[in-house]
Image (cartoon, rainbow, N blue to C red; front, side, top):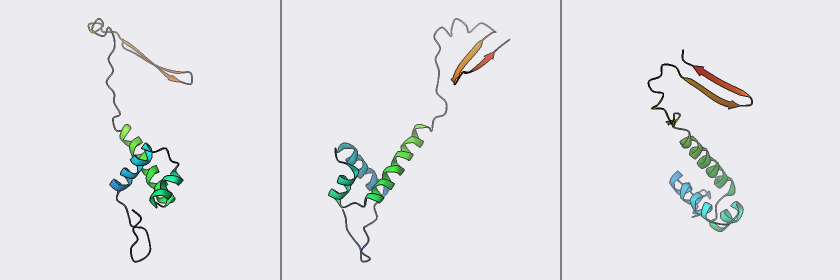
Length: 100
């Protein structure tokens, strides 16, 4: 894959090509350096593509901000006009919401 043009620079790869290489790397047992050396890839370009791929996968995981919540016994309390919600946020913080 290390084809050079007239300028002597390595050929540019598309994001799809980098994604395929990163997938191959994920399935290999090689270090990044060994993987890149075996394929004639510049390590700096590979690590940049790997970082971009990881950032994109994290962004995709956070696209859905709302998650449906099912509460056991919710039907029992559906007729009740009073309700309480308590969220433990960590670090000793608790958010309490009460209906009156």
